[in-house]
Image (cartoon, rainbow, N blue to C red; front, side, top):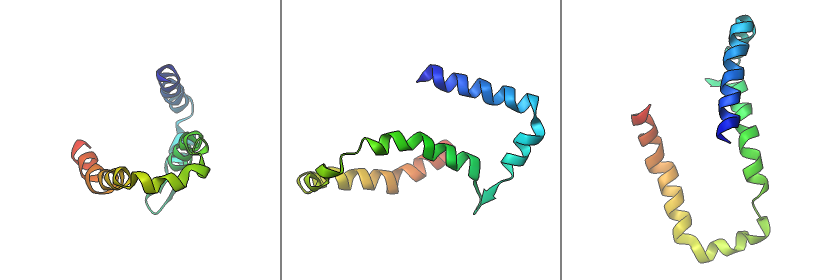
Amino acid sequence: MSLWVITCILAGIAFGKISPAVVQMLGNWEIAQVNLPVGILIWIMIIPMLIRVDLKEIHHMREFWRGSLITLGINWLIKPFSMTFLG
């Protein structure tokens, strides 16, 4: 995975050097202040994880409701502020 990420970073830098006008045009594509190419690529990155979710096992969430609440709390109450601080 690390090799893949490094390769993609280097390919992106090379693409930006070769055709900066195309990269600038893609950078201007936004909806509600969200860059569309970045949003699409993030969804493409997340889809493999979503596919592995076994929806037949969702009913077991009742047994582990505390873990679900902790995860929701961290992701919605703590992470946005910690990421803002780090950014």
